[in-house]
Amino acid sequence: MAEPIQLHVDLEVDPAKEADLVKTFQTVFRPTISRQPGFVDVKLLKLRSIAVGSPSAPRWRLLISFTTEELRQKWVATEDHQRAWPQMEKNLRGAKFSAALYDVQ
Image (cartoon, rainbow, N blue to C red; front, side, top):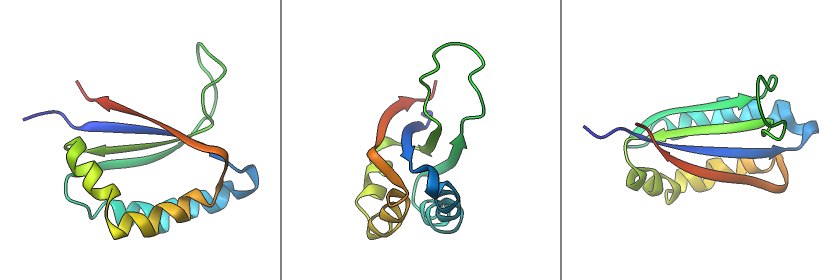
């Protein structure tokens, strides 16, 4: 069986909306994405500190894992995603986010 994929989404969160982001993740985004075919896991991470290396690490990161990239893309195309993601995005600012796709080894 193939290993899942992970999408790492670095979020540029409006500091005044951090609590709203967490609440939206817990009450809207996580419950919605967890019902999708191929869903494996989702986590919202807030940086505590830089242990070693570059101080330019993002303060907030969303980790999304699906069994395949094709199933993740199907989720993005759903009406559920079109309802849930804008609620997360309204707590962001500037460039809002960047994303990198990883294969789990």
